[in-house]
Image 1 (tube, rainbow, N blue to C red):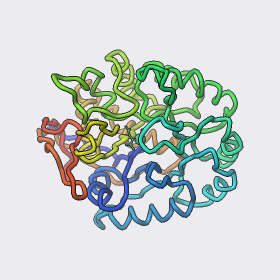
Image 2 (image 1 turned 90 degrees about the vertical axis):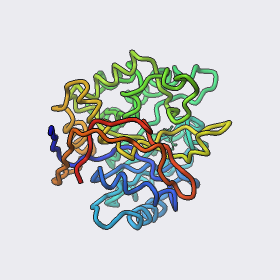
Image 3 (image 1 turned 135 degrees about the horizontal axis):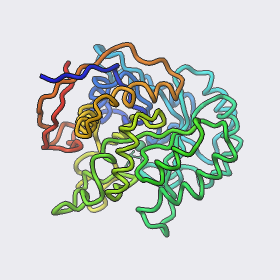
Length: 344
Ligand code: NCD
Ligand code: ZN
């Protein structure tokens, strides 16, 4: 039987939620990943050091003791964030980055930043403290075609930003377009990107396959086939600017299958297996380990993990749904087979 042994991976973009919902799902991530960059878009948003540290404790309380899972915390940037908070965050061991949501761009982003110029003094403090800026790279302008929002963001916000803050470390999160791949490739070594499983597996037709597919709806929304191929190429290229970030974002089945369904795809059930299957289908198994386990850690200045993970090529079926608090949760590719399996 074919096997693949790699350094245990990290997830550089993860939504864990809180309370009973978090308790239902956190161990899927803890089983596959050593560390995860945890997104701060709770309600209320994680905007202070104290909030981040107590959220971290709640996460650790929900993690099964058999895992050595380390949550790496982020703060949520608002127009009112103060440079002093950045200085204090930088002194902690566990706060690793700040997340920039353009106000209104995605789930729980209503108190995000309304104009990047409003946080220039904060970005200055981040640059000095070497804390990375994690960007949801879409304009929130309803006049802009939803499929163009990433491209327009690059032109309107990112290009001026990298000129003004050439030493700021930036992660362009969950890239979805050829324009984003090209931007990252042409930018300095301070600019990198995370790539989700869904954006290299699916294109926008998968939203409308026979009938509307709410479980394939996330933001940034799936793009055209050419974009998918460009992002897939970047992920499997062995270029250290591109690394794993699932953007696993659970919403209950009732909230997804609703008249105004939430954006977000839950992939943490078996994200690592899906990535390996995708790389295998490209004959790029040799590029799995750097993408899943080296490039992100290197970019963040973290030590690479020592633990190993072995996967076997063996078909398993992804369940139709799993428990989620007192509701259900539908994983990415629910009901389909996956050709790789983590060996526990
Ligand atoms: C995320 C969520 O649900 O928190 N949703 C999503 O579609 N990706 C927010 C985000 O990362 O945009
Ligand atoms: Zn996200």
